[in-house]
Image 1: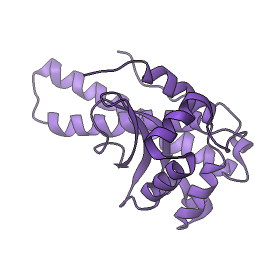
Image 2 (image 1 turned 120 degrees about the horizontal axis):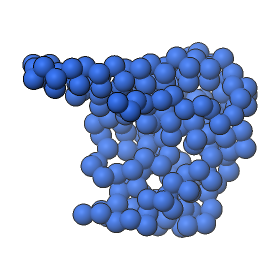
Image 3 (image 1 turned 135 degrees about the horizontal axis):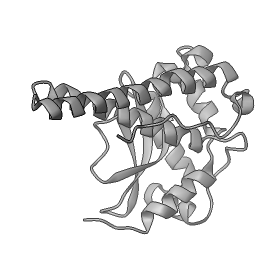
Length: 203
């Protein structure tokens, strides 16, 4: 059975300093992200065992566990690519034009996503996603790792607001973590994701 795998980071642990410490990045990637990969693979095995036995008494719990772990894996995989030692600034090209059309300006997008991030109740994410049916960008809050993204919306830019993402370095100062995040955003990666998904309408 094909399993989920922890991706390598595209940079060294210290590459995002001072905005994101090497120790924090190491723990976030090697421990927290790895735990979601492990959980997803273990749940796959349990689902296969349930099918073999024809015993689906625990299917609801297994499906929830799979959604939780796979979504955590996917969002973190996007996050590492969304960040860069050479990040920050503003988007350009077609992505910038779409942002202007859907939000008014890059600053308006940043303000809305910052508010979404700092007001997530409990653990979650702020996400800029492409909604293919309406052919537009949306900013949404994601609770835990799933549950508040419309069906068919594809995450392009993600901001982790779980405490494990910032507490070691920023303690309870969520706003400081979000401010640092904007200094690291890899707009080239976001633009490539946008180009890949915006060419394909659905529904």
